[in-house]
View: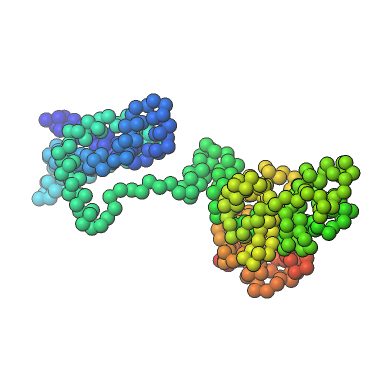
Length: 431
């Protein structure tokens, strides 16, 4: 008799373990992985996907089974073990509380068996390989759903009405955000599935939608432009001193832009000995103009639509504030892979100090120093802007700001423009 009851307890534990495996594996299975397996012709993967689309009946079956088994296990365990435990304790204690003590010990023992073998271990197994486990149990689960269909229909109907009455959601949103993809890439890099460079590349792609054009453009003061009245000697000197691919062409000043010239049009004239006058020679092309409020992703779309890779950036007053190229945008995504010989704007001197160009985008500084957010970062685009915003004045050499465990000190100024910033780790920052 006792052996039969012990066998019944073991059987209940095994059935409960099966439903625990099914519950966790279905919830933890990744849809992307399941779709790949289904595309390879694995029918169980397609069944699991279908079950994930409408999991309500499945979870109802699981809860009915687990609760029924838990109650039944308690009844069988109490009947099987309580008298046996009481008999074992009788030589030591034969008082009025003997049956109660026997029941508590039997209850604790049976509960421990269920917790360990029907809950903890199955769920851990299911979390390790959820897709494989889900595909293994999906057909028996679908059979159980068919057998328990009347009970499922009843309980689901009651649950749906209660959810509607309390105005609670009954379905989980399946939208995947950019943050979800970046998080998955980061997890893949930590697991060794992705290289760290690949993970950084994915993060940078989504960063295009949050960074605006001024964070990647060449500032107004650094633009090399040509004028219509410029002499041929001056044009040659500018091209020799600044070997860019394209040069804006203006009437007289940078804000009076009429187009741009490409070195591919200038070089044949130099080789043929032809004059380089921009006023007479029809080599000036129309220039793409972008507002400074665009994100880099929007700028990339404008480049694609205009079939251009060069644009001037203007502010709300139609004043030129910078120059943006397709290479600037791609450098944001790929970094040094696009321009491996470009001078670094952030130079690490040692473990606790960095020399940073004042025009460095604030996002790049945040990444280099591992600072989650700068105070008021919506009001500026560069590390120089951060210092001016924080100091509330045009900084002078040796002016400094403590923030986030770092000291930011102005070490070089060029005509009111912050040229170089020395950053040192001090552990006494704020924010």
